[in-house]
Image (cartoon, rainbow over all chains, first blue to last red; front, side):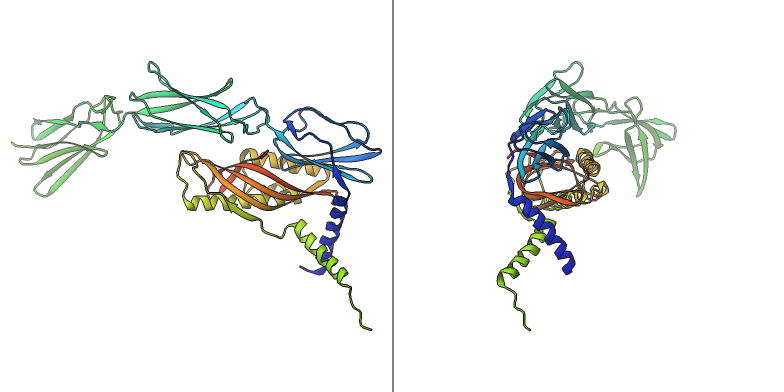
Length: 288
Length: 171
C-alpha cells in the first residue's frame, strides 16, 4: 500500500472517528414489524439527515429536529438488522434495531421430491416447506405446517411439523397402490399442492410359458405385477434369452397389455430364460 | 539539523493507518464453526460442509463489494433468488440516494442447522460481527459496530453453493 492511499484511508477514518466521538444514542424502537409505520420523536433543533442502512434496505430522509421522524407504512419492509443514524449539525445519534417478519404466512415455498417413485417405499417422499410473509421475509418464529399425502379412495397420511428457522420438513412412505398422489403443505390459510406419481415397483414372480409354433417356440409371460399387485406399466422391457451349445440369442420385448411375448428358434436342448430389470423369471429347457 | 518526531505523533499516525485498514477491510474475518448436533434428514459430509462455509464467506465479500461500489453485478457469483433480488434493490436504493455502505465482517460463528432430504438446500445460522460505515456522496457520516445473527439458506448450482436467503434475526 502506498503512503498516499494510506493517507486517504486515515483521513476517512478520522472523519468517521470524529463522527463517532460525538455519537449519542438515538431513541428508536428495538423492533419493528415489517411494513409498519414508524413515528419517533427527534430531539434538538435544526435540520438533520436520517440514514437507515442494512443489507436489506437503505433509506435517507431529511428531517426537522424537534418534530417526529415518520416512516410510512411499507417503507421498511425487509426483515433484518439495521443501523439508524441521525446526523445533525452538531452531533450524530445512532441506534440499532430489527425489522421482524410479519407472523402471518403469505407464501409457502414447497419442495416435494421425487415427483415419481415406486409404490410402498419407506420414507421415499420428502417435503420441505419454507414460509414467507407478504414481503418475502422468511418467517423465523416457529409455525405449524401440516403435510398431507392423499390418493383418491385411500386414507390420507397427515403429519404436522413446526418450522425451525423458517423451515419445516417431512418424510413419508409412498402408498401401496400406484397412481397420482396429492402432496399438500398447509400453513394458516396458505396451501401449496404437488403431485407425486407413484408407479409400480419391480415385478414379482416373473413367469413365462412356451409352446411350439412350427420351427419356432412362442414365449409369453403371465401378466406382470409388482409385489403389491399393481400392474407393471406397458413399455417395461422384458428380455428373453436362449442358450444352446455355447450360443446365445437375446430378444428385448416391451410389455404390451401387461404381457410380453416373442418367438425364438425351437432348438432341442436349448435353455430359455426371462428377466426384467433386476428380476429373474423362470427357466425352460426345450425338448423336441 | 536533526529532527526528532515525538513518540505521541508517531503513535497517532500508526493508529490512523491502522484505523483506515480496519474500516476499509483488508483483514480477514475470524471464523469459528459450531459442531452441529444434527442437520436434519440428510448426512452432511465434511467436504460439503467446507464448500458451503467457503461459499457463504465468499458471499459476504461479494455483498460488501457490491454495496461499497453500488454494483449489483458483483452479487451474481454468490447470490440467487430472493437474496440476490433484495440485495440488488438495496444497491439500487443506495445509488438513487447517493449512499454507499462499507461492510467489514470481523467474526463469524457458523452453525449448520438443516440439510434438506434431497440435498437441494442447506441452512446455517451465523452469529456475525461487522462494522458498517455510511457514506453520503462519498463523505463518511457514521460508523457502527454490529453483532447480530443471520440465517442463510444456500442452494447448489453448477459449480458452487449460492445464497438464496440471507436474513438477520434478533439473537
